[in-house]
Image 1 (cartoon, rainbow, N blue to C red):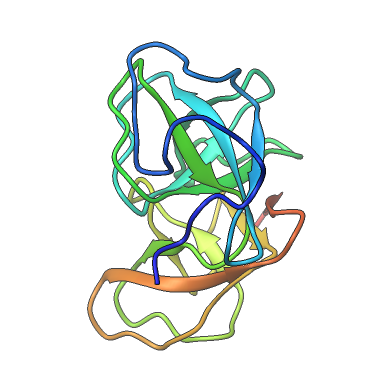
Image 2: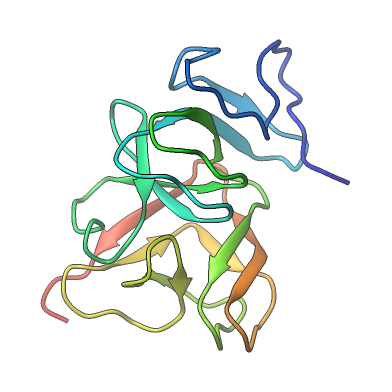
Length: 164
């Protein structure tokens, strides 16, 4: 069954994107999978389906990489649809979103940022990348693909790795 909004909210569907904000950016809704989604604007570049993204304090978003992950306290979310540059849409903060993972990623192990935009992996990164707290894959994969992950209520956060 597809995930749907369960909050008493009239607004755009989870799969809708718009060139103007339909609801205030930063609006959070409850989802049928027990998670939450937040309404954001794709600011610097387009966001791909199932990409891990950073949610900034002004509720703009960009796809997550090891390069842009190095700041403490940045929240991570997961796009379930593509959002064009300058467009608005929903990204999942928690629940059971699909997430792009690198090849040979194991289940129920820590996940890290990668140099590939929007993709997570179980391989420890070096440099300014980060460990993601609050997310686990539910399956082991051999090929790079999007899989259902469990993201704890309260969301997923980056812990920067320094000197690794």
